[in-house]
Image (cartoon, rainbow, N blue to C red; front, side):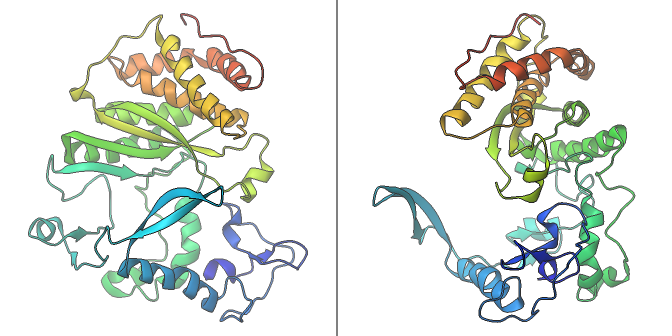
Length: 354
């Protein structure tokens, strides 16, 4: 509700549409003509307490009480989905206060703290799913302070109310590549410690600059991980404000799946690197184009870069991988040009020995 009721909110359209919340763009953007909406709401309000309670909180409580899965299908010749109930038990369990409590029988353990240092036992986790910062793209803690100013007054226990900011000297987010790499690497090293040998680490990522990819590659390999699969998925709403302002907007995220390097072999890449990268990237670009999805140059870039770091992460050493990534700059741009032509009536050329 705070997102829709503040001096950074505005109308969609010229005062005739719904309320556009303050984070329609991932920055603090002062509005020339902010609106003053009805906080508690009317039958036709948007962004008000009554509207949000029914559409968000009410629906969440209903789902927790009777969860369902969605089954895709066809109705009247069009794609549709059907809610399937009864497959899952109700959501709602008593929380463990620490890992020992969790092992003792409590089914959910939620902890807020430093992800590079946890109380979870070695080799006890099947999967780690995370969403690391996009290097220097979004200043998460600064933006979240907008909510913390209000929420700290209802989070009085354990001293939260005394803390004026969510900022931390040890937060992973940093505009400095070395700092970001080091801190992300520490979190990934902890994930490596708690994962079982057959466990999977998976996260989403995208970035338009080489530093963002080299940082992730170095952090992963230093922590002991290799990338085993990368899958691009549509991640941004097509109507999102950043999409309309950017010259080559990124509409995709890459799901990156990793396993411990100790469980699969390494490879010393030479002439065969691009012969494995380009066909895989071409196949993924082709599938998007055949589905009618338009891809910007930066969308194509992150598909190619993901396939590249997937292969490089199996190099014998971190130094080998980073060196190959650094000298590949010109070839990356050439292959992006070729991939841009895929599905547009122009044949792509398979990568050379590189």
